[in-house]
Structure formats: C-alpha cells, structure tokens
Length: 267
Length: 268
Image (cartoon, rainbow over all chains, first blue to last red; front, side, top):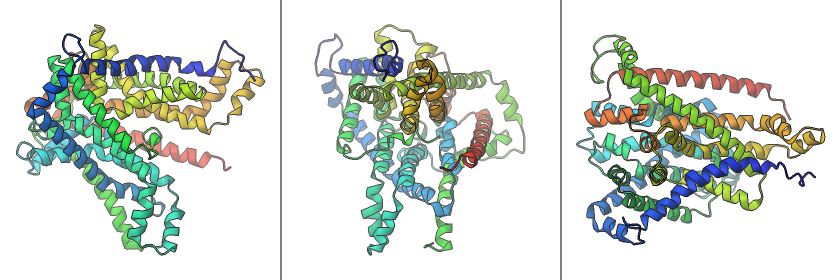
C-alpha cells in the first residue's frame, strides 16, 4: 500500500473544489442567514419577519406562489409522466435523440423561449394582461416540463419490468398494477421531478412577469425588488423563508431515494 | 407482444404531440423569421431582411457573443474544478465525502434566486465590484454540482485496481491519474461540460444578479426589451432560427457519434 505517501494523496485533488464551494456556496448562505435574523444596524432581531408578515401583500404573494408552484408541479407530472413512460417503453422504439429533443429548447435561453410563448398565445387570443394566471401557467408548464420528464425517464429505464409482469400474472388489473407497482417503483423520479419544478416555479418571477404582464407577483419578485432597493436584510429573510420551505420539502421526502444523477447522467 | 397496433400508434402520437406543442413557439418564430412583419401572425411575403438586420444590430450581436463567452468559460472552469473535485471526493474518507457532497447539494436544491441573492450579498459584503469575474463565479456555482454528478458514476464504474497497477508499473501519481484515471472518466467529463454549457446558456437570474449592469447577455437583453415593449423585436426571430439550427446540428452529430460508439463497443 502507498498510504504512507504524504507528498501526494488523491483526495487532495478536491481541495480547489472544496475551497471554491466554501467561499461561494457555504459562506454566502451563512451571510443570508445572518442578514435575515439581524436588523439594519446588525443587531439580532426578528424585525424583518414581523415587517414581512404584517404586510398583507407579502402574505398574498407567498400564498399565490405556493399555489402556482403546486399547480405547475401537478400539471407537469400529469403531462410528463406518460411521456417519460412511453419514451422508456422499448416496444415503441424511441431513441435517446427523442429524449434529447425534449431538452434541446434549453439551448435557446428561457427568457427568449418564454417571450416566444407569450407572442404565440397572444396571437392565438390568450392575452396575458387579461388572463395573467392562465398565461403564467402555460409559460410555467412550457419551461418545466423537460425537468419533469428527465428524472422520470431515468427512473423508468432502470425499472424492473418483470415486477409489472409479475403483478399481471398474480391477477392484478392494469389500474391496480399502475397504482400499486409502477408508481411506487418510480417514486424516486417523481420526487426528483417535483423538487426540480416546485421550488423554481415559486421563485421564477421572469416567467410570470413576461407571461402575466406583471399582473402577478411571486415570491421571486419580492426578492428581486428588495435586491433592486438594496434591502439586503429583507431580501435575505425572504430567501430564508424559501430555504425553510425546501427543508420542509426534503423532510417529507427523506425516505425516498431521489434520482440524484438524473440531470448529470443525461448527456 | 401484448397491446395492438392502435395503442402503439396512440402512444407514439401522444409523445409527438407533446413534443410538437413544446416546439410550437419556436417553430412559429422560425416561420416568421422569413418575413419582415413587426409581429408574428401577419405574413408580408418572403424576405431575409430580418437576418440582415440581425447581423447589423450591434446590441444583439454583442449580447449573443457575451452569452457564449460566459457559457464556455464558466463550463471550462466548472469542468476542471468539478472533475478534480469528483476524483478527490471519490478517494476521500467517509466524513469528508459526506461534507463535500452535501455542499454540492446546496445549489441544486436551492431556488436559483436564493443562490443569486446569496452571491450578491457576499460580493456586496466584501465590497467586490460586479464584473465579469463575479458573473463567471455565479455561473460556476450554478453548474459545478452537475459536473461532479456527471463524473461520479464513471468513477464508481471504474476498476479500483488500475490506479494502483499503474503505480506498481512505475507511473508517478500524476501520470497514473492523467493516463489511467482520466481516460476512464472522460465520458462523464464531456457530459458535465455539455450540461454546464446548456445550463449557462439557459440562465437569466444568476446573470442578472451577478453581472456588471453594463454587461448584456441574450437573456438580460431580451428581458430588458420585452419588459419595456412586450413583443419580441423581429430580428430575434432570425436569431432563434439560427440557434435552433445549430442545436439540431449538434444533436445530429451527437446522435451519429453515439451510434458509432455503440457499434464499436465490444461485447462483454
């Protein structure tokens, strides 16, 4: 064994990465938390929290964001789940190229794509200024559907199909097989997909701004507004609220092994 | 086979119809890039005027160039740091591994705007002026976890003895890493790089928060202009067409090469 070699160890290769992450991921998060729980003069206080929640508009924003986030997650799963299932079905003969086609729009920046979607539905008669919620939902589904399909697809190609056959052999009806066998087996993909859609939806103020013509305010708008005004303490508080929502989400899904490599293993 | 031909057809049809709807806005832009009307929906005869005005539009050209500069330079840094990181993490002890992998999860789980705000606060806190470097750091933070996630599976598939074997045969640690470990993980490195470019090209929020406000990328340019006047400027239709074509070409090449690699792969 060469463990005694002190001059060079392979684990040292992670040092630049570790330093970078400590500086630009961990330290900034610590600052956010620090700013969120102190007031303007740097004294620890819950002032920000009371200011934020005493404004009805902020509470409304939070509620609307949660609802749009949930609605978009549900819609994306509803549309994307069958797509992923069919893409993974060998008999249909879809290739990796078809799967990649679902991702390719990402090469066209999402602001540009969203503006294009806005122009298209405007032409078709759905005006964002008149129906901001409908238009926003369209924009959200357009943007997040690929993020739903990919993790689901990754789980489904790994799924043990013989269990589905076994379920049939044991006399289960198709609906029963789906609910009792397929859904539990693809749970990791469902959870990953939901996490990739829910949080970003709540905060993606760009889509609601472009599609809903600034008639809807999402929690991302609040952060962006505080950022523009240089109100770091308030902005940090809103960011911290989002962090807490993420933590709550991960707490509820902690028993499901999520599809970590779904995005990494794609290409 | 169970199901009949009709269900097979309906199933295929569903996938293609979803794909078609997803591409509809892009296809409409492509179609109306060949006429010179102000808004989509009206056709004013075939014309390539939007293309010539696109190349004459300095703002758009500069923003496009900047977008690609940021995407490729940040992908380069991310891939280098992330690959080294993944290899180092792989050979680290249990605790260090958990810690380093945990750090990588933060930007993935966080909403992008939280990452963006946290970086802004860091730079403001330390009095750093926003410039290209801060923007680059933002994009590296956004993409580096995905490089690590792309490289990790390749390390896990690798035969653990080859590094030791290379050293036993007289290779220095450096050489063993470069000549033995690196070739094993190269597919993961490449996919990490492509993924980084993709994520960076698609980004708006990190860019908006960490850039010098005079520095425009495509996303900040489009956001600025659509929030002022609503519809997309016509020459962006021509640009979208060009990017779509480029992406299609890359996809085709990747697909062809993938097939070649598939047929070359020896059976085990």
